[in-house]
Amino acid sequence: MVFTIGIDVGGSKVLGGVVDESGKVLATARKDTPRQGGSALTQTIAEIAQELMRQHTVACIGVSAAGFVSSDRKTMLAAPNIADWNGVDLDSELTKLIGLPVIIENDANAAAWGEAKFGAGRNEDHIMMLTVGTGIGGGVVVNGALYRGAFGTAGEFGHVRVVPDGHLCGCGARGCFEQYASGNALLRHAREAINASPEIARNLLARGDGTVAGLTGAAITDAARDGDPVALAAFNTTGQWLGAGIATLSAVLDPACVVIGGGVIEAGEILLAPTRQALERTMPFAGKHPSPRIISAELGNEAGLVGVADLARL
Ligand SMILES: [Zn+2]
Image (cartoon, rainbow, N blue to C red):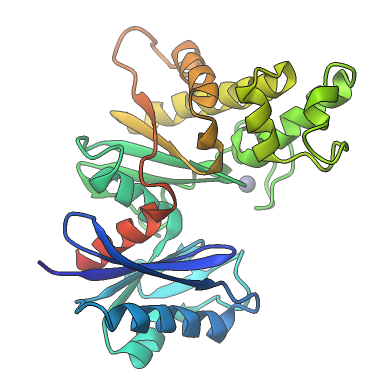
């Protein structure tokens, strides 16, 4: 049995694990993500790897992080959300520190591969994964292999335009999918519902600090579970956008299943039911062919490290 290490760079934590060939995590290590990024982040990744290498003999290391990765999987070309990490040749810098071969992969691709091989999509060869958090990340598995595209940027579902001249997005374009169907969009839909009918929204506001600005996704989820009508309406609106977007994407990729991960999936069926309903309503040629199953991710926040540990082996 060959063991590999997967290390997932998140916004607040860097999480590493030793993973076996069946996707089982044998040991983990974690550190805070250094805010200054750059060589401090590379050093943090090396320290986590070294800590794990003291416990197990491993063959190679995979690192997953948000950003655009070179097609040879060695260099982080651009990491818009990480300070001072653009153009870092991680293979040579990390190999110098730890003496093992290293690959890097986009975090959404890594999570998609983890779910496809070991998680919710493990019996399927054609999978779309959407990680619905602050934004929407994505990954595509076609014929049982991760589809990276010519430049490694396939599956950037969050920036597919769904509304001409719609809300401004962090990517610089307008009307992107993630402005309507992400965790941040859930907050936007909730705030709009509150502003439209503040009397009905009093109970929901009381779950935060009482202000519209202080409302969190977790509070909306809790309220929706308790049947709060404004919170349920916000999830319904988010699910409608999500399902309609998935219908459009399915017309291109024809997946057997769509795995939904990320923070919003805490709400489970409260989000997935309206998502499925919108998919059925907006799917081109609905009823003339099977629709993809929309299911919850299973690996939680370990999907990225399990996926990238396996990709390092390939
Ligand atoms: Zn965008």
